[in-house]
Image 1: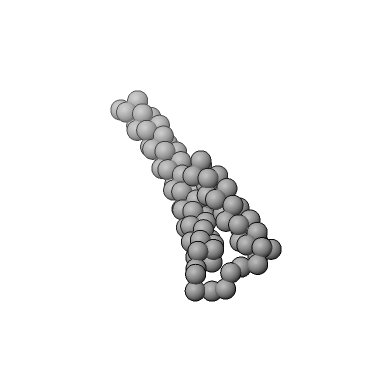
Image 2: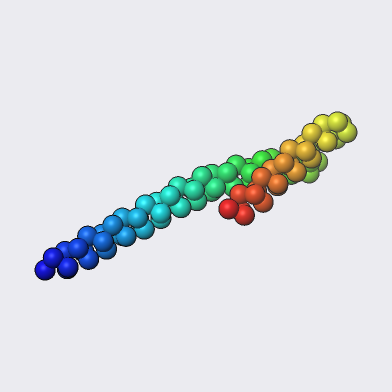
Length: 83
């Protein structure tokens, strides 16, 4: 009887540790998902600004700023997807 209770206690401890690990992974996943969504919105915004024919052509300096923002968002997205 004592052995069964001891085994049950050990199993419960392993289960708790497993649940805590899964919870930590889910938190990280949710954080990454939020970052991925933010990057996607930045990329969408930049593509819209660069490709929108209804507005006047962007000045070269402004186009570089938008391209830098687009590149930064793409790099951040790649980093988030690696995690």
